[in-house]
Amino acid sequence: MAELLAIEGLQAGYGATEILRGIDLAVNENEIVAVLGSNGAGKSTLNRAISGVLPPWRGTIRFEGKAIERARPSAIVAQGLIHVPEGRRIFPNMTVAENLDLGCYARARARRAENRARVFGIFPRLAERQAQSAGTLSGGEQQMLAIGRGLMAEPKLLILDEPSLGLSPKLVEELFALIQRINAQGIALLLVEQNVMQSLEVARRAYVLDNGAIVLQGSAADVRDDPDLKRAYLGM
Amino acid sequence: MLSPIILVPAVLNGLLTGAVYALVALGLTLIYGVLHIINFAHGALLTCAMFAAFFAHRLLGLDPYLAALGLTPVFFCLGYGLQRFVIGPAAHGEDRNILLVTLGLAVVIENALLYAFRADTRTINLPYGFDVVEVGPAFLSVPRVIGFGVVIAVALALWLIMRFTDTGKAIRAVAREKLGAELSGIDVAHIYAVTFGLGTACLAIAACLLLPTYYVNPHAGNAFVLIAFTIVVLGGMGSVAGALLGGLIIGVVESLSGLYLGESLGQVGIFIIFILVLLFRPSGLFGERA
Ligand SMILES: Nc1ncnc2c1ncn2[C@@H]1O[C@H](COP(=O)(O)OP(=O)(O)O)[C@@H](O)[C@H]1O
Ligand SMILES: [Mg+2]
Image (cartoon, rainbow over all chains, first blue to last red; front, side):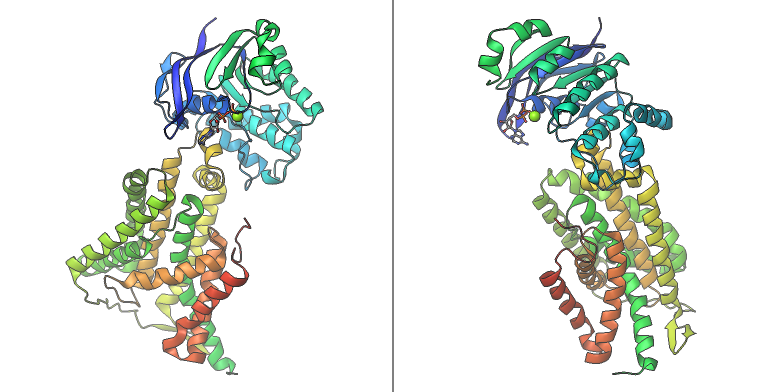
């Protein structure tokens, strides 16, 4: 199976504070990879470094074989690596349709109408609310919109950062079903989640991050059965 | 109370003056709304545009309205370049630095103009400069009526750009959600520069509308920017509709307070409004509450 994303020796941080202390991580084509870790472990920082909004200090990031660790976020999006950030970050002052359209800004612009129809097929709820201002959507709908906006760019790799945050248990259930459906369309996913057990059910492989370093990795089943998982790294 | 014979012309003239104020304010509020900075170089750039229009007429014999067609894209590019290659890189992402950079830019531009053209005040003579048109009880200056129409057209064009073009949507996206925009593939540095360019282009148009009836010297732009700042606060920081309406209101207030308090005190009314707005409605007419 071909490597889609390959990260080696990644170091990054804010100001003078180092957060990521040498990360090695890979995502293969068509794979769901879970990144687990307690609050403040550095998961979102890792996502920011991959998508270029936080320039890495050291290390390499290759996407489809091309080095992207010095690329601008817009160039990384244009290559098909899409990061749906923690906290959704939709455009609250714009309509649902406008939010989706902006997902095609740097990529797949010519197929905007088809992609919109595809997203509405996945999220019928968004179709009903096309003309509504995104800021007035419920939390669950906003999360759908954020993922929908990411899908508009025809991602090869989709990074989801805590997509289940703030959703009701029923919606979380739906979300994990959706993640599998997206993956079935041939899209690889890097899934950052607090819902450890559900994530390990859908993922093929997993990494556990603690204090900016990877402390456990392997197949989802191995990670799930590791005696150290809950006790040491997830603070449970 | 004054009779309508005096009041109506004062209001109409106030609207005409206010329209040009609104255009200057439009540029300021656009830049504030997206970059979240106050562009202290706005006045100096307006002065630059007025000199450009002046010399386009003096040296090339270009009518200011014709010159606007050329100066608008030139000033768009100037604004784009300033933000992309000077202000942006010099700021290192800190708003405080941007403030200082635009302030420094203003000082440099003003002194360069003073050095090149001295403090002399210049005007141009146009065959239609003193033409008037009769509207009810009022005689209105033809160049200022044209100016009013152009400002409305520019505001409409800006609104259409913001609402319907990809770039306009990207500008609105960056204004409210920078990280979300970046992760959607929008090049934020480019959008910042486009916005700064649009704001600067507004100044080129304003300068060409002013020149037929106004003078130019190295400080000419500052008076307008002080008023434009009041308008931006009145209309709501960052609101395009607010800038337009605020500009018209301020124009009328200035005209009426000139009428009641005497010509030299016309601007007192403006600053009373400024203080009242800050006291009672700091978010302005169209401003979003925090
Ligand atoms: N913008 C920032 N500036 C400074 N420190 C930050 C910033 N964002 C996160 N951090 C710090 O980096 C560490 C990792 O945070 P984050 O990557 O958000 O963790 P996680 O997503 O795993 O909860 C935390 O200690 C956090 O306080
Ligand atoms: Mg996080």
